Length: 248
Image (cartoon, rainbow, N blue to C red; front, side, top):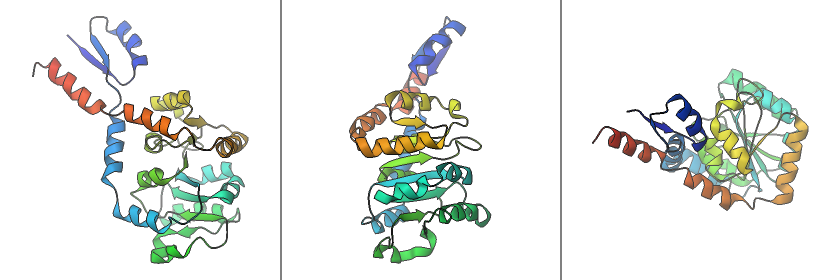
């Protein structure tokens, strides 16, 4: 009399082998709903930052949850990507000891990043000399930045492990990651199969991904937004199935 709820249809076959008498159904992954709820709630500070940067050059790229190891792999690409837009670097940790090597790594590649916590209303005067780079030394609104971005690189994949790819993918933008512990998250394989996410092993692959973005533009955003929308609603489906199974 077991009822098993799988996050993906691909899990049903293996579960059926282990539990041949169970009722098994794919309901989707509730984590997409949680990310959507957090993103929809909004953050006044994030809204103010995005508005004050509205005139900064596009496209916007976000290096989210970035570690020094990620910047090392990016190398000179950090500077090259900003030649046609603005780079937002959001470190995984923003305490002084963690922030310093990230900022030093950016400056060593010829950028002069503006810290958001020190800029105040002065951001409205524009990026100054190119290339344009913003260093987000505050916490709590990475998802909002992804929503305003044109592409994202999710950090951790060249260190302890990649962070959440659902946050940027929800907004229909192309995403790249490094390889470390990518196998832990089933959505990574799913996003790779749709072409939205690219897993890079070396800098050359990262350069190729960026070049491909420039050549193709961002024409698949509406398609990827539709796919993200289709993944929502798993939370309600899970609760309905639990209620049915319990005879409620």
